[in-house]
Every structure is written in structure tokens, then in C-alpha cells.
Length: 43
Image (tube, rainbow, N blue to C red; front, side, top):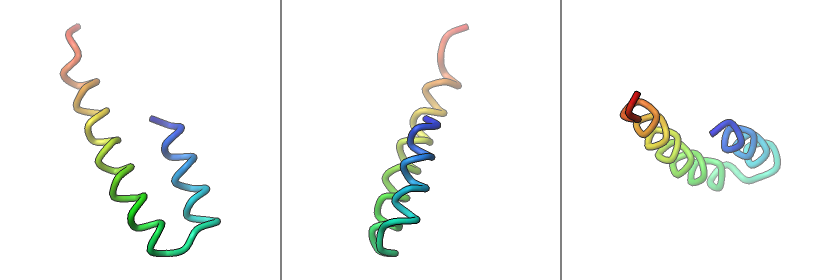
């Protein structure tokens, strides 16, 4: 999940604003799903 944050930072620095918004929405959804999966993981 931290790799996605690094990739988003790279996109935001090198990409256009519209691309950053699109990638941010997709990566945000992926991070939320990953957090839910970790939260629901059996102990």
C-alpha cells in the first residue's frame, strides 16, 4: 500500500492535474479496500 502512495506522489509531480485526480480516485479506492481487508483479517 505504501508503494501506491509513492506512485501517486510521482504522478502528482510529473502528471497533469486531471491525471492526478483520476489516479488519486482509483488509488484512494484501492487503499480503502486494502485497509478494510487488513481490518477484517482474522486474528
